[in-house]
Image (cartoon, rainbow, N blue to C red; front, side, top):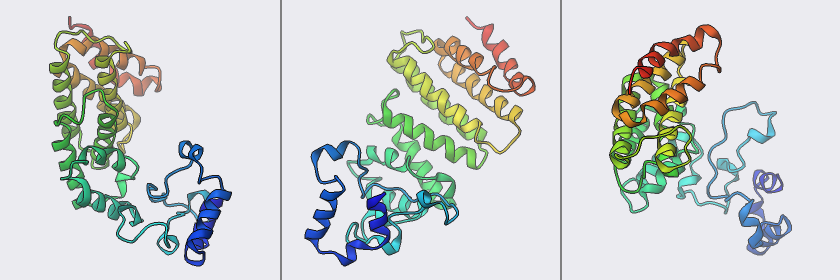
Length: 266
């Protein structure tokens, strides 16, 4: 809070370099111990829209408070989600650090991207996910799946999301071709499936439609994943089955056609 208030008061424009160092030391951010808990000021996503009265939703790195903390050319010097996404894509999409782009984009509200920027992000995700940097059970892949889910939900693209999930399920099936996946088994194949199904859930329950339709969309995502990864079908069934108790009777009832289908499979 102290650093945020100092930035909002444009302290960096008023203080000398030595005074800035002293301020950091006084706030406890100059020590090595602070690295584990204090956020990096050059990795701060734009704040969400909120009433001015909510101080914790205000942007400590707003355009008039950047001062000497970040240069205007720094990617995180951009203080809108669209400008920041564009800067990151321009800077990193074709570089050796492209595998870091998905974790950085994960911090943004992709619902606030302009259509051309959203298209660029989707193209990057489609190309990046098949590279060796994105292991099917890796953290970078989890963030990539989440971004894809949010982008597809914003335009209600069920077919596009299912296609993406199918591709990732097939990639995982090839990776673990000799393994029958168990739900929450704790191994790599189970982790990969859970990430795919979490993305399916994130997509489905972000759709602007009645809850019963959201459950239907989730079930259909599970069906196509099971089709693409047959040795994970029973694990998909278990994950969908556990979702029955989440909604009311009418809404979660939309899961049953797919549940019955998967129960007939070996």
